[in-house]
Length: 339
Length: 221
Image (cartoon, rainbow over all chains, first blue to last red; front, side, top):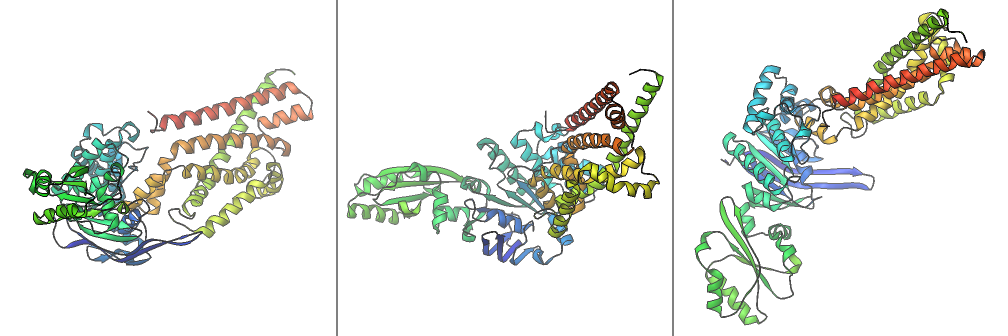
């Protein structure tokens, strides 16, 4: 789906907030190209600046410097009216859903159409189609308070799609949902991306969300972009410390990293028929201690990672490293200082 | 105390006078107070259309008006009633000071109702390209309706209690009955009847407000 032409380009975007304790930099010199039709992830820990970044894309926050180019226009230089018009081409969904509590869900979906000046009748028709799409047509008359979290987010997605936007911004859209609901909401976003060609920008602090649906990802840390690439690239070769932390994810909590050397071995699915660890043990004649192992589905490919502890003996350890090198299995050393 | 036809018709008139003093003052006070309540929220720092200096000045004026005791305000404003409606005596004359006293109160009540709205919902409306006016009409007002109705019950009962003081300046209504008979003529019977009628009116207004608020609120199921 993704083409090379960027739909959104951020050029040297900076954002500073004035606080009582002096200015705080939320974003510093951010450069990003988001391609038309892709699902782009922005991941970072809380406070990294990712929410501010997404709000700079639809001008809910005005950047203090730089350009936000959407379909060739620099939004940062536009007047309020032009910004409002541009926002109609960008739907947004939120962690807390942000539905209007006093409107039933059909009218919630009608809301952006009312704002855009679409006639009542036409709006209702379009809203019903969208509720159909998200599987909630039978609940059209229900109020948000009567729905579950997942259903509310479906309504929010229908609402975000009402004005036929080219981009959907998702701000921690699944962070308030349980794992199963998260899965179904992500599947819905993916489906919308594929069937409608809508570009989706996903903000999250969970690597699993990125792995499940994103094509490319930017890792944001301390107001900067620490790393950017395809999800499988970053998974197999994280270059930044924060990237490594996010990839290791739950391993960090499960593994008690010792002072000895540890290797993180990455499997990308091709080797799944090969008993790599058994072969390694047989070839090197040294026992290895597996500290953590997990497989993940990244973009339809089963990718796995394993953390093994290297033997104390220097030459034994080097033999293992050389063996991995010889069979072209990606690996990297991890220490407790990485996590 | 004699309960003859004259007394009863006097009470009837008093009920009617109280009713229309309160109704008219509430109406006028909302016509003034509601927009000011909206301005207080919208122009605040971090509001949807920040004009901090305007917000500050308005807040100051509202606080000033609210700090004048009603009885004093009544004496200050009655000359204005003379100019506007030609008299400073009777129930119609009281409507003007009541409105002036209640409007700033209502502005604050409305303000607090609006502040209860989840800022996320306003942000969502903004993200859809809603203008300031659209956010006021389609988000602030409808979303705070239950709270506005509760606030209205509070405001109207307050106006009712203010209206009772009108008796001191030659105004009418149940308050005047209570003051004239109970305070000036030592006839506590009629005073108590007037007080009970006031209590009943407060109960009715409060109940209407509570019920309207509850029934219209879609958050509770």
